[in-house]
Amino acid sequence: MNVPKKGVCPLPVLPALPGDKEAEFYGTANVPHGKVEVAAYKNYAGADKTMRVYLPPDYDAAADARYPVLYLNHGGGDNDKAWTITDPAHGGFANFVLDNLIAAHKAKKMIVVMPDTGKCASRVPSAPGKDDACTQEYLKDIIPYIDGHYRTKASREGRAIAGLSMGGFVVLHTGLPHLDTFSEIYVYSSGHISEEDFKTFEENYTPLLKDPKTNDLFRIPLYMAAGETDIALFNSERVLSLFNRTGIRTFSVLSTGGHEWMNWRRYLWQTAQILFPDCEAR
Image 1 (cartoon, rainbow, N blue to C red):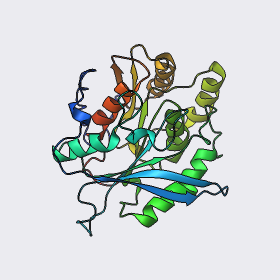
Image 2: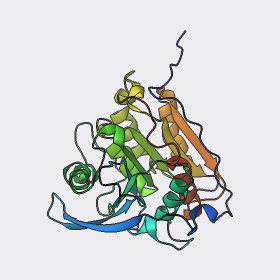
Image 3: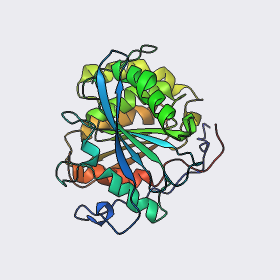
């Protein structure tokens, strides 16, 4: 009998999502606030780029502390500002979500990096051993810049990657082939749109997913979430089915609502609470 085995870290309890009308979890509460900086860099192709960097409330005061990093990707048509826009219909309030969770001791203190991947994100799955444009920018520019300018825990155990919609393709195409760099993967409202792209993804990644060693590279089960009226729901479920068929441990979340910030803020709130588990490096 083929009996599944437990993961390398204790399985966390996934918190229930806030209600779809709740706003307190991302409101400007009377708690210590972190700050959001704009970091400018030139990428490997010579383009001038920016990214938003959230630093937790005590970052400046705790001069010797080092922090894990969540790399958080926006969706199509947006840019690095999107996750910190404070408009309920058009933005993520990410810094306030983190401030409130950290103040309540429900999330670890972390750095959150929000790059501009609008010009490199692609629905087309990268071929094995051939990094796409976003992956190259992550490995050559974004991660080295962050590790060089901020007090990070510069290890795979200290890096997670998440993203919504088009940013979910960045997560899948950058995170999966580089589990030597990232140890946690979170996909919000995303999945390959065409049958052709999904078939390519399946062909490219099935050998990795079937490798019995792959599950041990996920410190938290791979997370996928979508709304019940989400335009990405069926695509998300198709990708999720591949993970399930190949034996990858997953968290699957179905929420109210559709392809909208109301959901993506809630997914961030939920996943931030299980990021960076306390267990031995592996």
